[in-house]
Image (cartoon, rainbow, N blue to C red; front, top):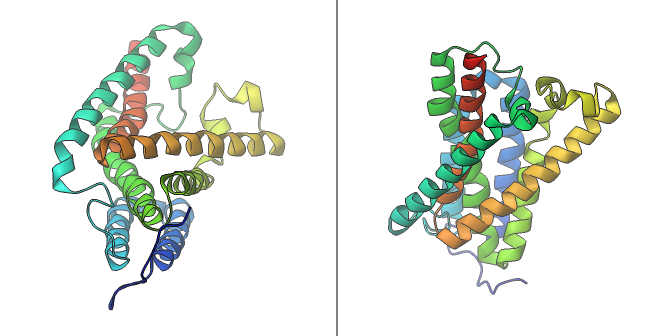
Amino acid sequence: MRRGSSGPAPGQISVRTGVAVTVLVLVLVNVLNNRLAPGAYLVTAPLTAALLLVVLRLAGGTWADAGLDRGSWGRGARWAAALIGLVAAGYLAAALLPQTRELFTDRRTEGDSAATVAFQVLVRIPLGTVLLEEVAFRGVLYGLLRKEWDVRVATIGSSLLFGLWHVLPSLHLSEDKPALTPLFGHSAVGVVVVELGTVLFTGLAGVLFCELRRRSGSLLAPAGLHWATNALGILTGFALNALT
């Protein structure tokens, strides 16, 4: 359902133009971070997040549209703390069960030192992953889509693009995750199945993140869950490797 719109004010762009520019920037940055200059992501990610916030403002958006207004910080932080606790408890239970313990094995992080793990948990994930993806998908895209359409369109649109965003990073997932290799192998069909599964899974995760953003009124809630899912998984895998 489309909301009423009186058109952009002087000096602004339309919401639809803002959405198109945001998607174009994300496509370019996805290729840049995963193919052309993967080592520069700690520079490109924050800069892209800032650029997209400028696009939101040019399209008439506010800090509230991005889930970043100051009045939402306290509530968002409480939501984030609760979600981080839930993820920590779930990972602990999974690590203690032999049936699920192998899910934490990842060849990309095998042999990492404590310093490397700390860098990933405290720098790479929050600045290189969570900041950009939350600002882009649950902040700018979701906020722009809600200005023009209803929450359902905003959630579906943002989440679908979030799923597609993970296509390039997951091309070798079945090889990096030993627990997946027996299921999908190394064939082209296996790669396609893993890719489709990744898009579906991350798209559904995007729906959850959007709902957290809506219910809390803050980008901090999905950001907290996003960070916990990625960072605590690495920490759990590192702890298991240290104990074996």
